[in-house]
Length: 292
Ligand SMILES: NC(=O)c1ccc[n+]([C@@H]2O[C@H](COP(=O)([O-])OP(=O)(O)OC[C@H]3O[C@@H](n4cnc5c(N)ncnc54)[C@H](O)[C@@H]3O)[C@@H](O)[C@H]2O)c1
Image 1 (cartoon, rainbow, N blue to C red):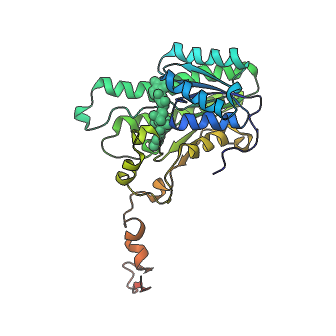
Image 2 (tube, rainbow, N blue to C red):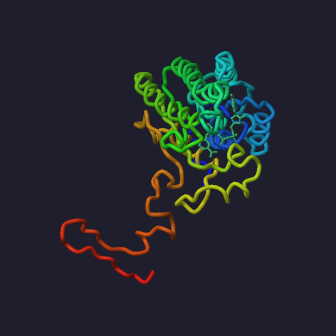
């Protein structure tokens, strides 16, 4: 897979939260590879430093800075933005991506503390990031872009993930409201909604284990962090100049597959016996035997 499209972010600065791992780390590499100055922000300071070391190994170290911070704490967001401006002179983009799985399980067993923790990281984090990054972008008057990481969990249902799903749905909603407000400053606001992506959040260090328990998706390859980094880069680029308020799904066809009423893959009954159903018209229906 291609990892860069030239140096289209030369002279631009991006703040990436959750850049110590997974999607955020892949995005840091992608943006730095395309010429951006990158602030690597993460709650896990050691992980943030490892991302910076990786960038240095790839010859991109001069263009990165790291900061330890909690996206749910306002003062930390201010410090992240201040660092970006102090170190690189300006802020153009933010990828508000930090996340955790948060509370899961039956609602009767969901504590208020775990619910609040989920919303603090996933929703308050995006709110505070957008609040402070947009002000820094407005200061230079040349516009920019905010991209948040939502999830297909926020677009669909499913028992056990009520807190995470509701939080990600809030990210989709925030994206729309902020896009409208910030358009006059030429700040575009979009989200990416990943499907299942092979990151430590999903596989907990055992990618081979998780693949056997995931429900099948239409696309044959599993999702990689670089797939989502590519969408974030597109959304910050001039190629997305007229896109704002949008959530782009990158899920290998999971949402398209929907409830899979007729089965998936080779088990899809409609695919096995094609034909036409003429319902209650009195006209005969047909089933064609294709020898499958
Ligand atoms: N992996 C998937 O399948 C998947 C699917 C849909 C959405 N997402 C979303 O993608 C985003 C990135 O997740 P990932 O899969 O790369 O996970 P990851 O665990 O690999 O990386 C997440 C990073 O966020 C950091 N972080 C957590 N809480 C933080 C906080 N309060 N402040 C600052 N940093 C914090 C972690 O330290 C970690 O480095 C998350 O928002 C997640 O919800 C992931």
